[in-house]
Length: 444
Image (cartoon, rainbow, N blue to C red; front, side):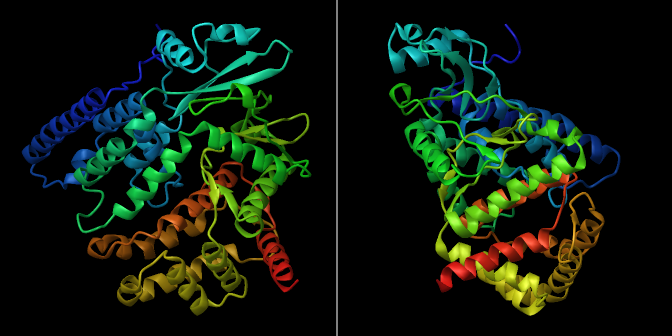
């Protein structure tokens, strides 16, 4: 059997045992590495002992076997361009984006029998047993209905929904154990929101409804393709939808500059529309959720489990932030950062000079009129230098509100994709046009 096939541990005890095995392996690695460094006369910190290459491999492999919330939570915090997170942790999280295993055929059959009955194959003219994709919550198969319609069948891993509470708590424990998170940092609100949103993502009937909603919102936008669900075959743990051909969005990186710019203008415009016009956002910018059609230039949008409303207060806070940036009002921008929750009052009071310096660097780089070159990362080192005193002040670490974090995840993920595509866009003009349209709508 291929190494890509691994049974998903669905029972609570087996998942707990997997976390115990992971914790034990990490502890053993810490002891061995600590002894080695002490013998050399070094005094290593716990975080440096945890994030060794061997432990990176242990974490990645075990979370990819568990799938579900364990793997999803890692992916949810993985959209970092390597600018802030330690490189070892970035490596773990980057691997998790593509590391999911497939269910063995017997386990897949058991899930589908439970959904459609023992004769489930009669519903299809053809069903390909080899998945075309696998992610944290489910895997996707290609099939054909008897009327000739080509479909994609997303099958949820067994036990995923029931394991969310425990998996999220266990991952949080591992993060604290690693020393990457200070004990004083209250992550309970974020964990509660992560559990709620992950529970929503395991409801495929809800996802089908969000897919239809996006299909309506983008019906007149020729830049995008949204598949339609097959309602009579879809249930809470199996989602059947149109199969829409397309290539991985990463393939776009090898296309001419104009094509890359057009695609990223569409995706960035979509984010702005979600934030300021739709009041609704698909908050998971995992690159696997986008496909590209070279012959039409259109982008196929997939996976709507993470689609959810954007609170009007959050939308308004982002509008204030961007307007302050457009007019280069540094004081207003700092106030907007406080308002939206990116920084705390204590951090501003303790590190105002560095925070103001970061604002100045970012405004000078991002606020330039004309084409913004996403591949130009020269400003990042300047930002990092000013950010380090804030990050090193662990006693005053601060988490933004969960609503802000999930919206920012989409914003940051889209920007990271633009960096990978080396896109060049009139960023300032695009933001100004969106906010201008927003103001006109409010006036009307």
